[in-house]
Length: 434
Image 1 (cartoon, rainbow, N blue to C red):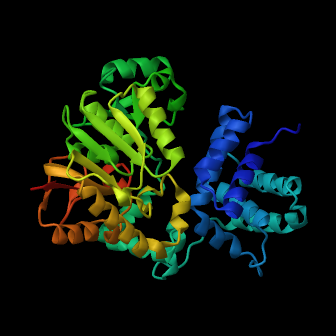
Image 2 (cartoon, rainbow, N blue to C red):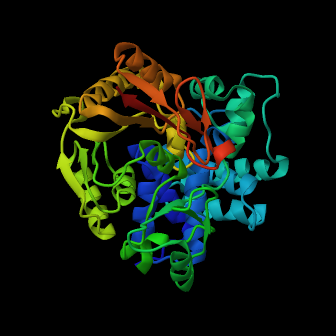
Image 3 (tube, rainbow, N blue to C red):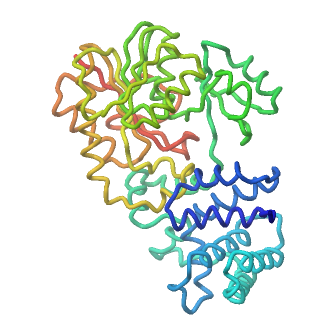
Protein backbone atom coordinates (compact mmCIF):
# COMPACT_ATOMS: atom_id res chain seq x y z
CA UNK A 1 0.00 0.00 0.00
CA UNK A 2 1.35 3.44 -0.94
CA UNK A 3 2.40 5.59 2.03
CA UNK A 4 0.27 8.74 2.21
CA UNK A 5 2.20 11.87 3.14
CA UNK A 6 1.06 14.64 5.47
CA UNK A 7 -0.14 17.00 2.71
CA UNK A 8 -2.07 14.27 0.93
CA UNK A 9 -3.70 13.24 4.20
CA UNK A 10 -4.65 16.85 4.95
CA UNK A 11 -5.97 17.20 1.39
CA UNK A 12 -8.28 14.22 1.83
CA UNK A 13 -9.70 15.64 5.08
CA UNK A 14 -10.21 19.13 3.63
CA UNK A 15 -11.81 17.79 0.46
CA UNK A 16 -14.23 15.76 2.57
CA UNK A 17 -15.06 18.86 4.64
CA UNK A 18 -15.65 20.78 1.41
CA UNK A 19 -17.86 18.15 -0.22
CA UNK A 20 -19.68 16.59 2.72
CA UNK A 21 -19.80 19.65 5.04
CA UNK A 22 -18.38 17.53 7.87
CA UNK A 23 -16.68 19.00 10.93
CA UNK A 24 -12.93 19.37 10.44
CA UNK A 25 -12.08 18.02 13.91
CA UNK A 26 -14.06 14.82 13.31
CA UNK A 27 -12.52 14.24 9.88
CA UNK A 28 -9.04 15.04 11.17
CA UNK A 29 -9.26 12.67 14.14
CA UNK A 30 -10.58 9.88 11.93
CA UNK A 31 -7.78 10.36 9.38
CA UNK A 32 -5.01 10.57 11.98
CA UNK A 33 -6.24 7.46 13.78
CA UNK A 34 -6.26 5.52 10.49
CA UNK A 35 -2.84 6.74 9.29
CA UNK A 36 0.52 5.56 10.53
CA UNK A 37 1.93 9.09 10.65
CA UNK A 38 4.72 10.16 12.99
CA UNK A 39 4.46 13.13 15.35
CA UNK A 40 5.89 15.63 12.87
CA UNK A 41 3.50 14.59 10.10
CA UNK A 42 0.54 14.61 12.48
CA UNK A 43 1.41 18.17 13.50
CA UNK A 44 1.59 19.31 9.86
CA UNK A 45 -1.70 17.63 8.97
CA UNK A 46 -3.37 19.32 11.94
CA UNK A 47 -1.95 22.74 11.09
CA UNK A 48 -3.04 22.46 7.46
CA UNK A 49 -6.58 21.24 8.19
CA UNK A 50 -7.37 23.81 10.85
CA UNK A 51 -5.42 26.63 9.21
CA UNK A 52 -6.97 26.23 5.77
CA UNK A 53 -10.43 25.91 7.28
CA UNK A 54 -10.20 29.00 9.46
CA UNK A 55 -8.59 31.19 6.75
CA UNK A 56 -10.73 30.00 3.85
CA UNK A 57 -12.00 33.44 2.78
CA UNK A 58 -8.50 34.93 2.96
CA UNK A 59 -7.05 32.11 0.88
CA UNK A 60 -9.79 32.32 -1.75
CA UNK A 61 -9.18 36.05 -2.10
CA UNK A 62 -5.42 35.53 -2.52
CA UNK A 63 -5.47 32.87 -5.24
CA UNK A 64 -8.25 34.63 -7.16
CA UNK A 65 -5.92 37.59 -7.66
CA UNK A 66 -4.03 35.48 -10.21
CA UNK A 67 -6.90 33.78 -12.01
CA UNK A 68 -8.83 35.18 -14.94
CA UNK A 69 -11.61 32.65 -14.35
CA UNK A 70 -12.14 30.79 -11.10
CA UNK A 71 -15.86 30.14 -10.73
CA UNK A 72 -15.50 26.78 -12.44
CA UNK A 73 -12.77 25.38 -10.19
CA UNK A 74 -13.43 21.83 -9.08
CA UNK A 75 -13.34 21.15 -5.32
CA UNK A 76 -10.06 19.22 -5.55
CA UNK A 77 -8.28 22.07 -7.38
CA UNK A 78 -9.75 24.68 -5.04
CA UNK A 79 -8.54 22.66 -2.05
CA UNK A 80 -5.02 22.36 -3.47
CA UNK A 81 -4.85 26.11 -4.10
CA UNK A 82 -6.03 26.90 -0.59
CA UNK A 83 -3.47 24.55 0.94
CA UNK A 84 -0.61 25.89 -1.16
CA UNK A 85 -1.44 29.53 -0.49
CA UNK A 86 -1.84 28.83 3.23
CA UNK A 87 1.52 27.07 3.49
CA UNK A 88 3.32 29.81 1.58
CA UNK A 89 1.76 32.73 3.45
CA UNK A 90 1.14 31.42 6.95
CA UNK A 91 3.46 28.49 7.68
CA UNK A 92 7.16 28.64 8.46
CA UNK A 93 9.68 25.88 7.91
CA UNK A 94 9.31 25.09 4.20
CA UNK A 95 10.81 27.41 1.55
CA UNK A 96 8.19 28.83 -0.80
CA UNK A 97 9.76 27.21 -3.88
CA UNK A 98 9.67 23.80 -2.20
CA UNK A 99 6.03 24.31 -1.19
CA UNK A 100 5.10 25.14 -4.80
CA UNK A 101 6.77 21.96 -6.01
CA UNK A 102 5.02 19.90 -3.31
CA UNK A 103 1.56 21.01 -4.44
CA UNK A 104 2.29 20.62 -8.13
CA UNK A 105 3.41 17.07 -7.38
CA UNK A 106 0.42 16.46 -5.10
CA UNK A 107 -2.00 17.61 -7.82
CA UNK A 108 -0.79 14.77 -10.03
CA UNK A 109 -1.22 12.17 -7.27
CA UNK A 110 -4.81 13.16 -6.46
CA UNK A 111 -6.26 13.33 -9.96
CA UNK A 112 -5.79 17.05 -10.59
CA UNK A 113 -2.71 16.86 -12.82
CA UNK A 114 -4.63 18.63 -15.58
CA UNK A 115 -4.48 21.79 -13.43
CA UNK A 116 -0.83 21.46 -12.34
CA UNK A 117 0.35 24.27 -14.64
CA UNK A 118 -2.21 26.68 -13.31
CA UNK A 119 -1.47 25.66 -9.70
CA UNK A 120 2.23 26.20 -10.31
CA UNK A 121 1.67 29.68 -11.76
CA UNK A 122 -0.71 30.84 -9.02
CA UNK A 123 1.48 29.61 -6.18
CA UNK A 124 4.61 31.13 -7.68
CA UNK A 125 2.88 34.52 -7.95
CA UNK A 126 1.68 34.17 -4.37
CA UNK A 127 5.22 33.47 -3.22
CA UNK A 128 6.56 36.47 -5.15
CA UNK A 129 4.00 39.02 -3.95
CA UNK A 130 3.16 37.77 -0.45
CA UNK A 131 -0.05 38.55 1.43
CA UNK A 132 -2.21 41.17 -0.30
CA UNK A 133 -5.29 42.58 1.42
CA UNK A 134 -8.03 44.95 0.22
CA UNK A 135 -7.84 48.63 1.14
CA UNK A 136 -8.21 49.13 4.89
CA UNK A 137 -11.26 51.38 4.46
CA UNK A 138 -13.09 48.95 2.16
CA UNK A 139 -15.95 46.70 3.40
CA UNK A 140 -13.96 43.72 2.11
CA UNK A 141 -10.98 44.35 4.36
CA UNK A 142 -12.17 42.77 7.66
CA UNK A 143 -13.89 39.94 5.80
CA UNK A 144 -10.67 38.99 4.00
CA UNK A 145 -8.23 39.74 6.82
CA UNK A 146 -10.12 37.79 9.47
CA UNK A 147 -11.88 35.29 7.17
CA UNK A 148 -15.31 36.02 8.63
CA UNK A 149 -18.37 36.54 6.36
CA UNK A 150 -19.99 39.96 6.64
CA UNK A 151 -23.20 38.62 8.23
CA UNK A 152 -21.30 36.97 11.09
CA UNK A 153 -18.94 39.94 11.29
CA UNK A 154 -21.98 42.11 12.03
CA UNK A 155 -22.99 39.72 14.83
CA UNK A 156 -19.53 40.00 16.36
CA UNK A 157 -19.51 43.77 16.04
CA UNK A 158 -22.83 43.99 17.91
CA UNK A 159 -21.47 41.69 20.60
CA UNK A 160 -18.03 43.24 21.16
CA UNK A 161 -18.19 46.85 19.91
CA UNK A 162 -14.81 48.55 20.22
CA UNK A 163 -13.21 45.28 21.31
CA UNK A 164 -14.03 43.68 17.93
CA UNK A 165 -10.43 43.77 16.55
CA UNK A 166 -9.11 42.14 19.74
CA UNK A 167 -11.76 39.45 19.52
CA UNK A 168 -11.09 38.76 15.83
CA UNK A 169 -7.33 38.55 16.38
CA UNK A 170 -7.91 36.07 19.23
CA UNK A 171 -9.64 33.66 16.85
CA UNK A 172 -6.27 32.76 15.33
CA UNK A 173 -4.51 32.06 18.62
CA UNK A 174 -4.01 28.53 19.84
CA UNK A 175 -6.94 27.32 21.90
CA UNK A 176 -6.21 26.71 25.55
CA UNK A 177 -7.56 23.35 26.72
CA UNK A 178 -8.86 23.17 30.27
CA UNK A 179 -9.61 20.27 32.56
CA UNK A 180 -11.60 19.91 35.77
CA UNK A 181 -10.07 17.81 38.54
CA UNK A 182 -12.15 14.94 39.86
CA UNK A 183 -11.70 15.95 43.49
CA UNK A 184 -13.36 12.71 44.60
CA UNK A 185 -10.20 10.94 43.45
CA UNK A 186 -7.29 13.41 43.53
CA UNK A 187 -6.13 17.01 43.90
CA UNK A 188 -4.01 19.37 41.78
CA UNK A 189 -0.47 18.59 42.99
CA UNK A 190 -1.02 14.82 42.78
CA UNK A 191 -2.58 15.12 39.31
CA UNK A 192 0.24 17.35 38.10
CA UNK A 193 2.80 14.80 39.27
CA UNK A 194 0.86 11.90 37.72
CA UNK A 195 0.47 13.65 34.34
CA UNK A 196 4.06 14.87 34.45
CA UNK A 197 5.22 11.26 34.69
CA UNK A 198 3.30 10.66 31.46
CA UNK A 199 4.91 13.64 29.72
CA UNK A 200 1.97 16.04 30.07
CA UNK A 201 2.38 19.35 31.90
CA UNK A 202 -0.49 21.33 33.44
CA UNK A 203 -0.86 24.70 35.16
CA UNK A 204 -3.33 25.92 37.78
CA UNK A 205 -6.13 28.39 37.04
CA UNK A 206 -5.99 31.36 39.45
CA UNK A 207 -8.94 31.59 41.85
CA UNK A 208 -10.38 28.31 40.57
CA UNK A 209 -8.63 25.43 42.40
CA UNK A 210 -10.62 22.67 40.71
CA UNK A 211 -9.52 23.81 37.25
CA UNK A 212 -6.24 23.54 35.31
CA UNK A 213 -5.04 23.94 31.75
CA UNK A 214 -2.63 22.01 29.60
CA UNK A 215 0.67 23.78 29.00
CA UNK A 216 0.91 22.26 25.52
CA UNK A 217 -1.33 20.39 23.11
CA UNK A 218 -0.38 16.95 24.42
CA UNK A 219 -2.63 13.97 23.72
CA UNK A 220 -4.13 14.03 27.22
CA UNK A 221 -6.99 11.66 26.34
CA UNK A 222 -4.49 8.81 25.98
CA UNK A 223 -3.05 9.18 29.46
CA UNK A 224 -3.65 6.69 32.26
CA UNK A 225 -4.71 9.60 34.48
CA UNK A 226 -7.55 10.33 32.07
CA UNK A 227 -8.55 6.67 31.74
CA UNK A 228 -8.55 6.37 35.54
CA UNK A 229 -11.05 9.22 35.80
CA UNK A 230 -8.83 11.73 37.60
CA UNK A 231 -10.07 14.59 35.40
CA UNK A 232 -12.32 15.44 32.50
CA UNK A 233 -12.15 18.11 29.79
CA UNK A 234 -14.23 21.23 30.38
CA UNK A 235 -13.71 24.76 29.16
CA UNK A 236 -13.22 27.46 31.78
CA UNK A 237 -16.42 29.22 30.70
CA UNK A 238 -18.48 26.06 31.11
CA UNK A 239 -16.94 25.45 34.52
CA UNK A 240 -17.95 28.98 35.54
CA UNK A 241 -21.54 28.02 34.69
CA UNK A 242 -21.04 25.21 37.20
CA UNK A 243 -19.95 27.79 39.76
CA UNK A 244 -23.11 29.78 39.05
CA UNK A 245 -25.22 26.69 39.69
CA UNK A 246 -23.74 26.24 43.20
CA UNK A 247 -24.82 22.61 43.61
CA UNK A 248 -24.47 21.39 47.22
CA UNK A 249 -24.46 18.00 48.92
CA UNK A 250 -27.64 15.90 48.80
CA UNK A 251 -29.38 18.15 46.26
CA UNK A 252 -31.31 16.93 43.23
CA UNK A 253 -30.02 18.46 40.00
CA UNK A 254 -31.52 18.28 36.51
CA UNK A 255 -29.41 18.80 33.37
CA UNK A 256 -31.86 18.96 30.45
CA UNK A 257 -29.43 19.14 27.47
CA UNK A 258 -26.54 17.36 29.10
CA UNK A 259 -24.26 15.97 26.38
CA UNK A 260 -21.28 15.67 26.46
CA UNK A 261 -21.77 15.80 30.25
CA UNK A 262 -19.34 18.40 31.59
CA UNK A 263 -21.89 20.40 33.57
CA UNK A 264 -23.46 17.23 35.00
CA UNK A 265 -20.00 16.02 36.03
CA UNK A 266 -19.22 19.39 37.63
CA UNK A 267 -22.42 19.25 39.69
CA UNK A 268 -21.92 15.60 40.70
CA UNK A 269 -18.35 16.22 41.90
CA UNK A 270 -19.36 19.47 43.66
CA UNK A 271 -21.94 17.44 45.58
CA UNK A 272 -19.16 15.06 46.74
CA UNK A 273 -20.90 12.11 45.15
CA UNK A 274 -24.09 12.63 47.15
CA UNK A 275 -27.62 13.49 46.01
CA UNK A 276 -28.66 12.90 42.42
CA UNK A 277 -27.90 14.46 39.06
CA UNK A 278 -30.45 13.56 36.40
CA UNK A 279 -28.48 13.96 33.17
CA UNK A 280 -30.79 13.96 30.17
CA UNK A 281 -30.45 14.29 26.39
CA UNK A 282 -32.64 13.58 23.37
CA UNK A 283 -30.33 11.23 21.42
CA UNK A 284 -29.15 7.72 22.33
CA UNK A 285 -25.57 8.31 21.18
CA UNK A 286 -25.35 11.41 23.38
CA UNK A 287 -26.68 9.70 26.49
CA UNK A 288 -24.18 6.89 25.83
CA UNK A 289 -21.39 9.48 25.84
CA UNK A 290 -22.53 10.87 29.21
CA UNK A 291 -22.87 7.38 30.68
CA UNK A 292 -19.36 6.50 29.52
CA UNK A 293 -17.90 9.64 31.11
CA UNK A 294 -19.74 9.14 34.40
CA UNK A 295 -18.51 5.54 34.59
CA UNK A 296 -14.91 6.58 33.92
CA UNK A 297 -15.10 9.26 36.61
CA UNK A 298 -16.82 6.95 39.09
CA UNK A 299 -19.82 9.26 39.53
CA UNK A 300 -22.53 6.97 40.89
CA UNK A 301 -24.82 9.91 41.68
CA UNK A 302 -25.51 10.56 37.98
CA UNK A 303 -28.64 9.07 36.46
CA UNK A 304 -28.55 9.23 32.65
CA UNK A 305 -31.90 9.41 30.85
CA UNK A 306 -33.25 9.87 27.35
CA UNK A 307 -35.64 12.81 27.10
CA UNK A 308 -36.79 15.86 25.16
CA UNK A 309 -35.97 19.09 27.03
CA UNK A 310 -39.00 20.85 25.56
CA UNK A 311 -41.20 18.23 27.24
CA UNK A 312 -39.62 18.24 30.71
CA UNK A 313 -42.36 16.51 32.75
CA UNK A 314 -41.32 17.26 36.35
CA UNK A 315 -42.96 20.00 38.43
CA UNK A 316 -40.95 21.66 41.23
CA UNK A 317 -38.90 18.57 42.12
CA UNK A 318 -35.27 19.76 41.63
CA UNK A 319 -33.06 22.06 43.71
CA UNK A 320 -30.95 23.04 40.71
CA UNK A 321 -31.53 22.96 36.95
CA UNK A 322 -28.92 23.25 34.20
CA UNK A 323 -30.28 24.59 30.91
CA UNK A 324 -27.41 24.66 28.38
CA UNK A 325 -29.39 24.93 25.15
CA UNK A 326 -28.64 24.15 21.47
CA UNK A 327 -27.31 27.33 19.85
CA UNK A 328 -25.52 28.80 16.83
CA UNK A 329 -22.12 27.95 18.35
CA UNK A 330 -20.46 31.20 17.31
CA UNK A 331 -18.47 31.31 20.56
CA UNK A 332 -16.49 28.17 19.77
CA UNK A 333 -15.23 28.84 16.25
CA UNK A 334 -11.62 28.59 17.47
CA UNK A 335 -12.32 24.90 18.08
CA UNK A 336 -14.74 24.40 15.17
CA UNK A 337 -13.49 26.83 12.49
CA UNK A 338 -16.08 25.79 9.88
CA UNK A 339 -18.70 27.51 12.06
CA UNK A 340 -17.30 30.79 10.67
CA UNK A 341 -19.23 30.06 7.49
CA UNK A 342 -22.50 28.74 8.91
CA UNK A 343 -25.85 30.08 7.76
CA UNK A 344 -27.17 32.22 10.62
CA UNK A 345 -30.65 32.63 9.18
CA UNK A 346 -31.84 29.95 11.61
CA UNK A 347 -31.11 32.04 14.72
CA UNK A 348 -34.74 33.23 15.13
CA UNK A 349 -35.89 29.60 15.00
CA UNK A 350 -33.16 28.59 17.43
CA UNK A 351 -34.13 31.40 19.78
CA UNK A 352 -37.71 30.17 19.95
CA UNK A 353 -36.51 26.64 20.73
CA UNK A 354 -34.18 27.98 23.41
CA UNK A 355 -37.00 29.88 25.06
CA UNK A 356 -39.29 26.84 25.04
CA UNK A 357 -36.57 24.71 26.63
CA UNK A 358 -35.92 27.31 29.34
CA UNK A 359 -39.63 27.60 30.18
CA UNK A 360 -40.08 23.83 30.34
CA UNK A 361 -36.95 23.31 32.44
CA UNK A 362 -37.89 26.09 34.86
CA UNK A 363 -41.09 24.25 35.78
CA UNK A 364 -38.98 21.48 37.32
CA UNK A 365 -37.35 23.88 39.79
CA UNK A 366 -38.40 23.98 43.44
CA UNK A 367 -39.18 27.32 45.13
CA UNK A 368 -35.88 28.68 46.43
CA UNK A 369 -34.00 26.74 43.75
CA UNK A 370 -31.66 28.01 41.06
CA UNK A 371 -31.56 27.54 37.27
CA UNK A 372 -28.60 28.39 35.02
CA UNK A 373 -29.31 29.23 31.37
CA UNK A 374 -26.25 29.07 29.13
CA UNK A 375 -25.05 28.95 25.51
CA UNK A 376 -21.74 28.77 23.64
CA UNK A 377 -22.65 31.70 21.40
CA UNK A 378 -22.39 35.50 21.54
CA UNK A 379 -25.64 36.72 19.97
CA UNK A 380 -27.99 38.80 22.12
CA UNK A 381 -30.95 37.08 20.43
CA UNK A 382 -29.87 33.75 21.95
CA UNK A 383 -28.69 35.14 25.27
CA UNK A 384 -29.87 38.35 26.95
CA UNK A 385 -33.07 38.60 24.93
CA UNK A 386 -34.09 35.07 25.96
CA UNK A 387 -33.48 35.82 29.63
CA UNK A 388 -35.18 39.22 29.44
CA UNK A 389 -38.30 37.67 27.92
CA UNK A 390 -38.27 34.85 30.46
CA UNK A 391 -38.01 37.15 33.48
CA UNK A 392 -40.78 39.38 32.13
CA UNK A 393 -43.11 36.40 31.75
CA UNK A 394 -42.04 34.55 34.95
CA UNK A 395 -42.13 37.09 37.81
CA UNK A 396 -41.19 34.49 40.44
CA UNK A 397 -37.67 34.36 38.97
CA UNK A 398 -34.86 36.90 39.48
CA UNK A 399 -31.21 37.01 38.48
CA UNK A 400 -28.43 36.30 40.99
CA UNK A 401 -24.78 37.25 40.45
CA UNK A 402 -22.22 35.14 42.35
CA UNK A 403 -18.56 36.14 42.10
CA UNK A 404 -16.64 34.40 39.30
CA UNK A 405 -12.92 34.10 38.50
CA UNK A 406 -13.45 35.52 34.99
CA UNK A 407 -16.14 36.82 32.65
CA UNK A 408 -17.98 40.13 32.74
CA UNK A 409 -21.52 40.73 33.96
CA UNK A 410 -23.69 42.88 31.70
CA UNK A 411 -27.29 43.99 31.90
CA UNK A 412 -28.36 40.37 32.28
CA UNK A 413 -26.01 37.45 32.83
CA UNK A 414 -22.29 37.07 32.32
CA UNK A 415 -20.31 36.89 29.07
CA UNK A 416 -17.00 35.16 28.45
CA UNK A 417 -14.75 35.83 25.45
CA UNK A 418 -11.46 34.38 24.12
CA UNK A 419 -9.68 37.75 23.89
CA UNK A 420 -10.43 38.77 27.49
CA UNK A 421 -10.79 35.46 29.35
CA UNK A 422 -8.74 32.99 27.28
CA UNK A 423 -11.70 30.65 26.95
CA UNK A 424 -14.66 29.95 24.67
CA UNK A 425 -17.16 32.63 23.79
CA UNK A 426 -19.97 31.80 26.21
CA UNK A 427 -22.98 33.22 28.04
CA UNK A 428 -24.62 32.22 31.32
CA UNK A 429 -27.28 33.62 33.61
CA UNK A 430 -28.28 32.27 37.05
CA UNK A 431 -31.84 32.83 38.23
CA UNK A 432 -33.58 31.88 41.49
CA UNK A 433 -37.25 31.03 42.00
CA UNK A 434 -39.17 32.67 44.83
